[in-house]
Picture 1 (cartoon, rainbow, N blue to C red):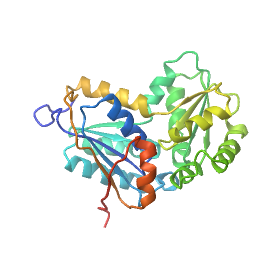
Picture 2 (cartoon, rainbow, N blue to C red; picture 1 turned 180 degrees about the vertical axis):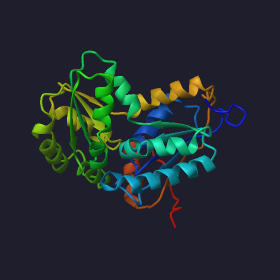
Picture 3 (cartoon, rainbow, N blue to C red; picture 1 turned 60 degrees about the horizontal axis):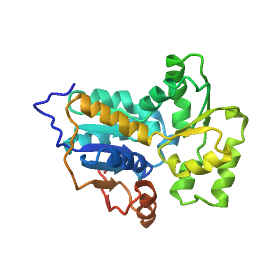
Picture 4 (cartoon, rainbow, N blue to C red; picture 1 turned 90 degrees about the horizontal axis):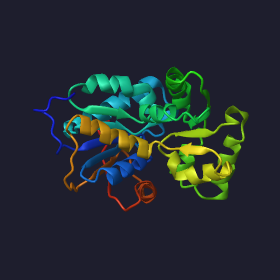
Length: 274
């Protein structure tokens, strides 16, 4: 529980990711919680996080969280599966008592393990997320009888970031990954990266829509609503002025950001690494 004297519902919600993929989470939060002001930071200068060491990702995550605290954020959403897997505990420790911290893994694990009809779960994500075994360990701890299969799909993030979506190239890459034996006979697939909702329909189509494909964005937004309400920090007033920062800028990031956030937004370059 945060100190109510120091934290108020009017303060913004901070969200960060290694790139613009976390805008899927930001969009879900905006739609569910229209009263909240959002401050988004995409570390595009260092993307992707998935192929970097635990120490490096933790360092970046701590630095970004520090910046969001300086912006008086009442809650920080780690909208990156890799950072959620390897840096959540460090970020939580560093901001304890100053802001709420939410990752994108725990709400999905809670959702999955509460559905008794799920028997065989697949997880795809970056190398960092999959190698951490975070999804498997947490799911099996909650429901040991569940079968969990994981597979790294490292080409999907750069594919999406470079705009290869809804075309023959992306379909071929998706088909190549999902055809592997690593995740066969599943009834549920977790998209373990906030970039992947962009290709959710393509993934579902591969399975002929017979596998439940789960992205974290709406689940995380619901979890944030629950946590803010429990801490008396939910802002129900109309709050404009969302802010979107990235650490490196190209015209393409502006174009693709509209896919993730579903409306035109202004990305401002902010590089505090130097």
